[in-house]
Length: 156
Image (tube, rainbow, N blue to C red; front, top):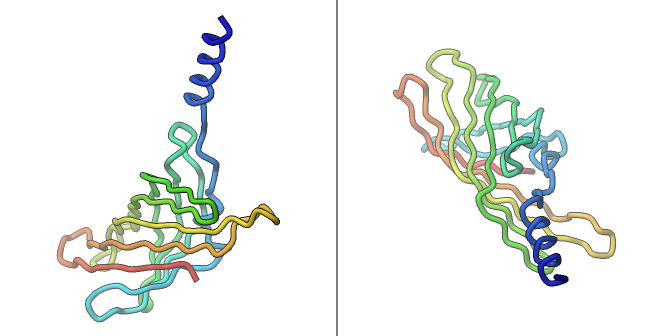
């Protein structure tokens, strides 16, 4: 009887386990992600202002903010989806996919889509995350399908 009870406790803990809410990570301490877009490696900034964990799927985060290329400022909304998590004793890695749809404002608006990696160190003494690194690698495609650029962004 004790074995059956223990089994049910373990199963219920596994079923109801939730991914910790890391929505603040994507805000990047209110700093923009910086990087390049296109073959000419033009500078791009992407700032996430709002980040919320999906209550139905704790592996997904809804985000919104803006992108800035040259003088082209465009709002976007989208999501980050965690697909894999690796935990080592001192370093953790989170892998996933993202898709951000910009407001439709003509030729220079479209969709960012790609993969991300988030790595960090865990300081056992202070019990805090340190040395956070986030990189978003993907593509940007205009809504009218005339422009298609590679993008690479990272936190500062």
